[in-house]
Image 1 (cartoon, one colour):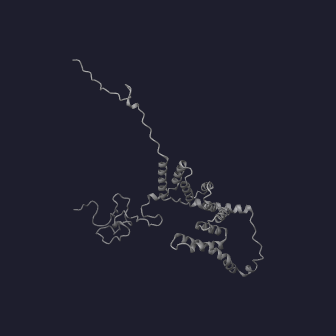
Image 2 (cartoon, rainbow, N blue to C red):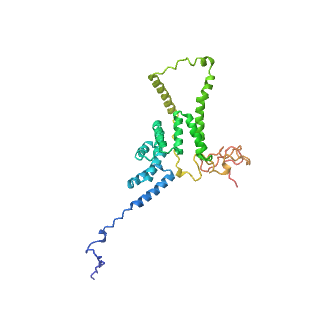
Image 3 (cartoon, one colour):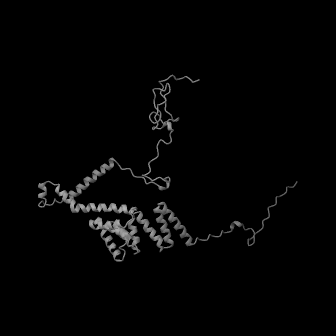
Length: 326
């Protein structure tokens, strides 16, 4: 009998499609680009989440992405400057400030942290002339500058003014008290403290102190030799006892309610049974033939064994080797 040939399924061409042309040849329509406003909104949401989580390095990168889309955005510029100050990147912070003259106080603070006291003082003077002398931040910075430059009386006056106008329960109040106490101690030593130190000297040395020649100045080579000797001793001590690097705690892995360095650590024996902990008094109920009354728990147990219990001694009691209990 002749075999029947299977007929191919009949295909119909779609409107506008040539005969024999497959539908796979069609190109997909390209996606429409996201508007700039929507992209900025997403980036600002990410920026807020990064700042709240303390991820300042990633937040700076997000600020750069925002500034590529909106180079003159004031919020992004201000946030980037804040992040530079938080991460103590004072050189790029100063470069960012130089582009905008609206951050005079931040410029003075950066110069103060970079040990440029004279320039910081000049910027503060200009800020006072422009009418910003009532700013508490500027007063704090001026007091710190006076303290560093040795003008302790001016620093004490500024700290007293800040202390009188601050909330007694605020953190600022306690900080001002600490700084005021340090400035007062230096001021008292300059006024009366050095006189007490002179009075404690022997009479022969105290009477001739005005006529004694100044101490001889050491030569540069002697100073260099002393510094080299001290550095070698420090290096030897460092090699003998290398300081262990402190690992930074990731706050995302810290349980809720736990403060690193403040919350006491958990009990290391919390995974053991209560009867096996070192705080429980053992040996109160001694069984017969216990092998000399060895205690269980951390004193006599080996927790590296598979069973997790202490191995009893084989020399005591009635239960000898090879006997089975009925």
